[in-house]
Length: 360
Ligand SMILES: NC(=O)c1ccc[n+]([C@@H]2O[C@H](COP(=O)([O-])OP(=O)(O)OC[C@H]3O[C@@H](n4cnc5c(N)ncnc54)[C@H](OP(=O)(O)O)[C@@H]3O)[C@@H](O)[C@H]2O)c1
Image 1 (tube, protein in one colour):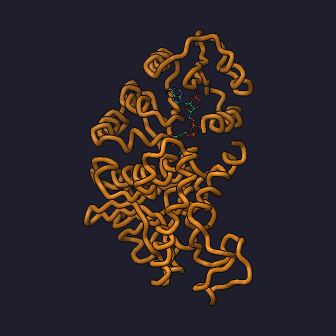
Image 2 (cartoon, rainbow, N blue to C red; image 1 turned 180 degrees about the horizontal axis):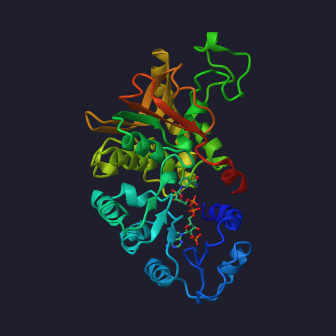
Image 3 (tube, protein in one colour; image 1 turned 60 degrees about the horizontal axis):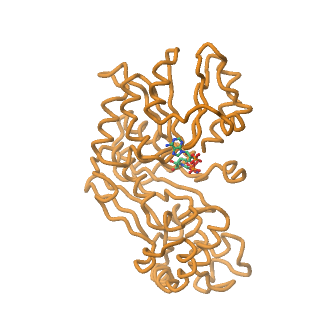
């Protein structure tokens, strides 16, 4: 994400001549302006410049000092890590009027007190000198989920329920394992909706779908990190808090893990993948149970505002439901509100930006 961010920024710089990139870090290297009278960092050569940088690596507190001493009225920290340590320092930046842009979920889905510390340090009518904080991509990657929710609330609508598929990986797995229309991924032919009770092209094994997703780079190196539901739970915490529920964290509501209990102890991802086929029967049962009700199974997150009920896990959907008809690794989020009534506002699209995948 960091690399692609810099590539996008590079193409935008001509439009923003007043913008200077003063520091670029990865965990083991830093590259920064040691004299603010010099020109800013060169975004065409940053990768080589960073890798051969002789400068000492700056930790996040030294980064704060660097930005604080930089001239200029508006300063921004872009955090493209998933580091909880970096996330825990956001209030320090915000209090100094430094704005933050980040896809990192940790700060917003961690302890409620951390979230409150961010809110009270950020720019607001009561705190006009605080920095701004934008984290749209922490939920739904490139899709406008957070801004849509904030906009609905700011214009006086009442949120009743939010429900969706919040993981590109889970989307891909279930759209293939239990397609709503039997030809949805093009891998089975000679079948149509009239025959949807029959398997065609051979039964789809859950473990084979996980392997396929892993081979295509749709999962974390250890797919258990996708299958345990925690990443989806973090996104639900973020949305629930924005919607006004003071959710304590990912442990405060039911999160269904698709990692069999017996495989949580596997030492390596390879051992996990090798043993996953032993458990194919369980997912097959879940799929058949849904099919008997004319439904397909999907891994979803939901927030019920009235009952304050947040949950993450498997659920069956009628085949005509928007969630059942999802394709590829798309995400979908439905906002049920007072104004939208029975027809929710739906945001749907690529869960990853494809150029990220192509390049990685
Ligand atoms: N990939 C997506 O489609 C997507 C979508 C939505 C949100 N996100 C979020 O975006 C963030 C980045 O994702 P990614 O896929 O790009 O992850 P990634 O490939 O693991 O990259 C993380 C980068 O952060 C650097 N880093 C880690 N700790 C650091 C520290 N303390 N100081 C400086 N740099 C540090 C790492 O540097 P080294 O390489 O030197 O260790 C690495 O370059 C995550 O929070 C992720 O959840 C990603």
